[in-house]
Structures are given as structure tokens and as C-alpha cells.
Image 1 (spheres, protein in one colour):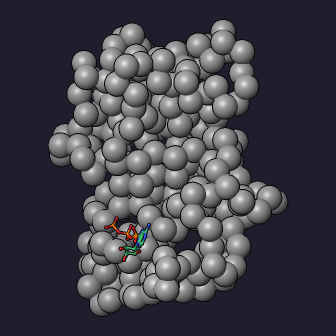
Image 2 (image 1 turned 90 degrees about the vertical axis):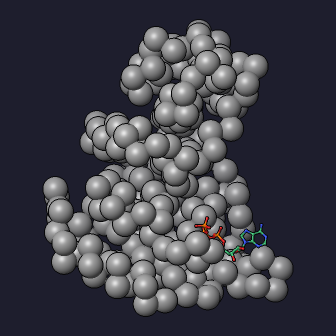
Length: 238
Ligand SMILES: Nc1ncnc2c1ncn2[C@@H]1O[C@H](COP(=O)(O)OP(=O)(O)OP(=O)(O)O)[C@@H](O)[C@H]1O
């Protein structure tokens, strides 16, 4: 299940400061796009506009045929900081997130356990966040997003706080989940190698206010040093 996401003539302001300038972007249904750029260029703002957490000052965002007017269950979000409730177990955290869907309790439980199993955390379902490693907590956050069966998955530097090995494992897990589910993914990162390892397409955002500086297709299994160098050049040219 996936939806196309469209950004049309999108600008965003915080107070008087324009942080995004009339940006157009189309994320085809089922695509995996990395949004790369230096700190402060507006990557999170783009993601938050699609999530419906931030309102555009100009232009519009649509998911499928519907304009985005606020958060919605068809758009799941995973942040760098997992924001789990410490007093709920892994299963409890996922179940709680499903409450807003109005699902009956047994269905919430079934979906929570299935999502935790899908991220490789079946054994940790009854553990509390403090009993889980950072990587495991991020798996819970991923399960929480997936359990709602979103058609768009928005990820804001989700692996930024993890050690290198855990991060690589999480990248593999995410690729596998994406290949299995076909969800449209928008993945914010400032790490070129992460963007190239994960995405089919890398968009470089930069400038003040932010705009799209480059848009690259990543050939499957690409370890292309020329592409990496080109993207690094775009990142540095802002
Ligand atoms: N709530 C806010 N109020 C005021 N200014 C904000 C707010 N959120 C972001 N900004 C500013 O908007 C600009 C873009 O921020 P944004 O978080 O989108 O960038 P980013 O590329 O995701 O950065 P980072 O990689 O550091 O997370 C920055 O200059 C930031 O300081």
C-alpha cells in the first residue's frame, strides 16, 4: 500500500524567516527518496509539512488525491528520538499508538505483536524501553509506525543516534521492510553514504531559504564513486 506525495510551489516560514522557497517535488507511490542537506537547510521542515505538523505559507502538499491539512494515519513518522512512553512495554507503546485508529483491543494487540515481530523484536514485546538498547527502542518506534499500516513513511534521521553497527543493521531492516511493503518512503539524513545505501533517489536540499539543488537517481546496488562525488559536490556548493 502506498500513495504518491506531491509538493507544489511549497514555501514555509517561521515568523518572518522563509526556510523553504516555492519547492516542487513528486514522490511516486512506492518510491524511496532520501533528502540530504546540511544542518538547517529545511529537511525536517519538508518532512513536517508532509506529516502535517507544519503548515505551508504558500503552495500545497497532497498525499494521493487528498490535500494534507494535518497529521493522518496514512502517513507514519519516525524521529531520531524514539519518544516511547517509559511506563509502557514495547507492545503497550505500539498498541497505544493504534488507539487513535479506533481499533478494538484484540486487533490492536494482534497488530502490535505482528509489527514487533516484523522488526525482529518478538522477544522484546513485554520489555520496557529502559530494558531495551537504542537500536531496539528504534525498532519499537518503527513497529509503532508500521502497525498503523501507513502508505507513506516519513523518517527524520531515524538512525542518527545509533552506533555504526546497529545503524547498518537498521538500514538493512528498513530496506527489507520497504521491499516487502512497498510503502512510499521519505528519509531525511545528512549522511551521503546512508542516503546512497538506502534510497533509489537522492535529493539535495540547500541554500537559504532552502531549495532543491540536485535530484539524483541511484542505480540499484550502486556503490558508484562518481555519483557519491557528485552529490558531495552539490552538498558543498551551497
Ligand atoms: N519551530 C521553529 N521555529 C523557528 N525556526 C525554526 C523552527 N524549526 C526550524 N526552524 C529554522 O528553520 C530552518 C530549517 O530547519 P530544519 O529543522 O527544517 O532544517 P534541517 O535541514 O532539518 O536541519 P538539521 O539537519 O539540523 O535537523 C533552520 O534555520 C531552523 O533554525
